[in-house]
Every structure is written in C-alpha cells, then in structure tokens.
Image 1: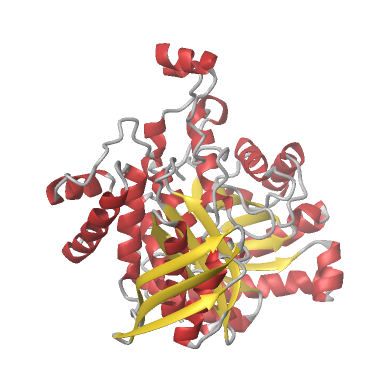
Image 2: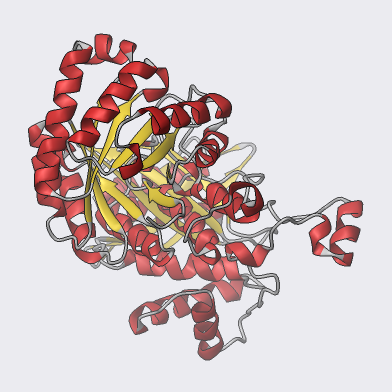
Length: 500
C-alpha cells in the first residue's frame, strides 16, 4: 500500500452544513471539478437520503467528475445505504461512508440504544454497504468521547464485515493532539485486521485544534485526513485542507509523508469556495488569508528583501499566488485579457470569455488598475451566471442618502424582458434598494444574510456581495460584484431572486 496521506474533502457535505453556506447543484459541481484538478483523493459529495436535491447533486457529481473517489454519506440504516448506492451508480470509483454514534452520551440520549445494539447495527450496515460497493468507510460518531475498549470492539467488528477505511471522528472538537494520537496508536496496535485498513481523522475546530489533532494522527500512522476548503463547517468548522497540505509539505522532515495535492491550486480553491458560500476568509488565516504572505514590519521587509527564507517558510507561488502580478487597464486588449485568464489557470469557453471581457471593459472605465484578483472575480462571476435564467436584470439605479436624509432608491429592472421602475425608502441605502426590487418582483423574501467583502485593496476596489434569502421553504445564495458596493448588493439580491 502506497505510503502517503489521502485527502478526503468534505466541503460539499460537512462544509455545506455551515449556516448560510448552502450551494446550488451547479456550484457543487464547479467546486468538485476544481477539487479533482487539485488531485483530491476522495470527494464526499453529500448525504443522498436527506433530500431529493442532495441525491441529485451526488448523482451528478458521480456522473461528471473523473479522477477522485466519489463518496456518499449514509447512516447505519438500509434506506440510507440504498440511497447512497443509487446516487453513486454513475461513478467509476465510489465509496459509501456509513456511521453510527459510539459514545455513551450519544448512544443513550440520541440513539436510545445499548452498546450491543449499536455493534449489531454497525455490522449490518457495513455488510450491506459492502454488498453494494467494494470501498466502504465506517465512522463511530463522537469517537473521542467513546470508551476505548468498546471502540476497539466496534472497529474490529466492522473490519470483519469488510470496511476498508476506519474514520475516528472528533465530532465535537473535544480531543487534544497527544490524546488523539494515543487513541490512533491504541487502535492500530490492538485491533485485529488494523493492518488491512486505512485509519482516518475527521476533526472539528471547537477548541481551535482541528489541524493540530489531524496532524497528530499522521505521526501515529493515520493515512487519511478529512477536511474542507477554508476549514468551513458546522460551528467552528472543520480541519482546513490547505493548512494540512502545506504543513505536511513544509515539515516533511517531521512527518515523513505528504499528500498528492497540487498546491498551486489552493488559492483558487479558497477563493472559489469563499465566493460561492459567502463565507469570508479572515485576513490572518493561515495559507490563504490576504495577510498570509504580507510583511509590514520594517525588520521583516528588510529580511525578506535580502532572503525570502528569513520570514517565509513557503513561497507564495507554492499555493498559487503570483508574486509578479500583471496589471491590466482600459487599454488592454482582448488578447491580453485572454492570455491572463489562461495564465490564471482557467480554460475559457468563447462565450464565457466574451461576457467576462465586456464586464472587464465596464470595470476598466471605473477602475484605473485591474489586478489578478479582479479578473478572477469577473470571470467566475460571469461563468457562474450560465444556466441561471435571467428573469430579472438590473438596468440602472439612483439613490439619495445622507446623515440627515432617509435613503431613497429609484431603479429600473428588466422583468421578463420588460422595463419596470420603482422607488422605495429604507433604513439604509441597501435596504432601500432591496425594497425597490421587491416592489417590482412582488416576491418579498426574507433576507437572512448579507456579506460584503473587497476583492483587492484601495478605495476603487471591486466589492463582492453575497446575499442569502429564504422564500417559501427555499434558501438560495446570490452573488454580485462591482466597484460600487450598493450595485454589488443589488446584483447579488437579483441573482438570488433569479435562482428562485
């Protein structure tokens, strides 16, 4: 068995459980395509039994994504396992990931089951799953608060039934690196058949230890880490994939193994997930934060100028950042724009390139210098519109506002190709423009989340807006960008309405 750390990416399953991070089917496929380019080993595409939408997304990823193993989650229940089997049918390489709680508190208060009942259910689930696929992963949920001897018995039983990967989840982010490493060592040395399976770590970040805990298992013989891009996920999030990958690569002298991930695609993965989910990355976030390779201290700057290794333990290029960014402007032609798109790692379709170039010209009239980050935002914004029916389209808007005035917005929309106009007051500029849009569309959804973030620095920076709305039981996320913050918000709101 080849000795390296497998990356099991659960951005599309566990990451999506982060409040406000709902993704459309097309967006999940877009992320999965990039994960495949990065050479992720396993993509956990979703939880098929949970809803028809989840089932369809898993099935489509199984059909369209080549390279990684496509995995579906299932409880230790036959209907769950059958739904996972059916959703994974189109996949060339497939895995069913089944789980059941193993801690005393979960067995008693959540399952109302005895340890012997849980053991029997786990055996049955793995036996059924193994009848459907050759690759079966088993997780004893809340493993780090489970009794070690029961955990040993449970893991041994599912290996007997054909489990090929054993995941030991720190479901509530409770453990510490030393303790987690000792648990892995205990299971690898005490469980019969341990040498036949891959042991995996799945950590949550409630105490800020998810990455440290995951890395501790590598030293104890673990060879799979379950993680998400940007560390998104429930509560405080999951293990951050980019941090694990670069820690193993930078400190191979300590760990002795690393992953097969193409690190040069890390920054784009981070940006893609950030823009799709609307989950902003903190500036001081390791590896992908905007300050990760910034040096403000004079002492640091002097050292970096003389030798980058004085204050940089990895290069910006190793995670996909270009140190010599090309600046484009209004006089840059289509050829230069296309060349830059290709250099940034995209494979543009002619229609996508045309739409993005037109937006580029519009932005270039308002912004003196356009940087790589602006171009990425423009291009991904235009390609993401593909497949979304443009029922509503912003034509123009005007606002009056001030410290002594009630904000008023007047705007013109195309609604089913017919121009409509409306004016509305609001508690603020954004509120007034949203209310004016509501008047025209007649929808009046609940706004549950609004995030505005700059793409680059400066007063003329491109702004990205992410809007989450809820309407008649549906939740959708809309995106918009502009050098004008209000326009970005309006575009994001209209994009969300179109997605409805």
